[in-house]
Length: 480
Image (cartoon, rainbow, N blue to C red):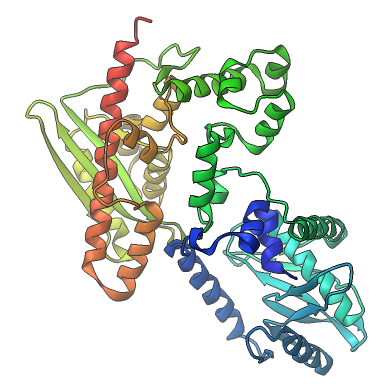
């Protein structure tokens, strides 16, 4: 068996992912998402930019011939190459442990001692993330561990280069022992074929190729990780009290649970389980109202498409609803090139200021944050900004503060689908739009822009659909 840095990375992220990568049925593994491929291309661009600024050596070997790659890497180290790209660190299997393989992005020559002379090497990994995640640190320590076997000296450091170019030093004194434990646990799981329990973590699972297979399994088990608000730590706490099903969660009542989770969280989880079991929405216990959800002759529904890596908000979509004439019109303010961001910001202002009394409904804090950010980037007087911000109504906040809905996620898509809205393009999300815009800038295919606009319009209409449902539900339950 071969235990690689990628397998260790997966194990640190999700033990089940590592298990499925080794033992899962290939037919149940989804293709890589386009968004992940985009991130990988951007990661390679960052690496290429570093390579253009320096001389480097690179081992050349047949795919899969790791021993040859390791030999060439060692030759480059012996020669004292200043930088080695895609060096191979390989440790042959022993009777008690599998072969180990690591390929750090770079091996950098540093002053010091090793069996090669008065120099040694440290691993440097260029990663996709914007922060030094624990799994990145574990892999950096794994590379340092393998490198110590090759050069006869523990590296003086291990570095991460993050997506924004910042460098981060991995504390090897802390992470080497932790990594060795992770390595041992991962090896044991794989050697014995111990399948980890499924757990749906929406953020961590979003780009995983096993997401769909795990989700189907979790649904078949009515797994508590599908309950909004059940985090891994809360799940562990619930298990300690013998709460392992929706029925247990819906019926739980214990001062101990309240003390561990907090009264408010315990009540929220209990109501969420009741809602899921009954398949109906519930007024949140303790809800005293946020006032009346505004209704106006003219209402605006606002949604944004953004490209975070470009620090760009390229589409400001507004649905104008006239309740008197029972008509709607959608306005997509679209920056066909990034330089037009300021233009669409002014177009957006011109439209919303045409209806100074109209409430502006949106979903999540991002729209308000974007307006404040654009108002700084393309300045407007505070006398224009303040009234605009006061008109914003965050339907995500209203929903989560007032009702419990039988859904797995309080995202716009999940809520709007539950209340009966359908997007015209199935399987599309914000990540899809980011990829389409990136491709549009590369190839000029206007069909991609049309798809983005259609998706944004549907998001605005979904927001309107949710607002109508919420207003009706709160009105019907106001007297209860």
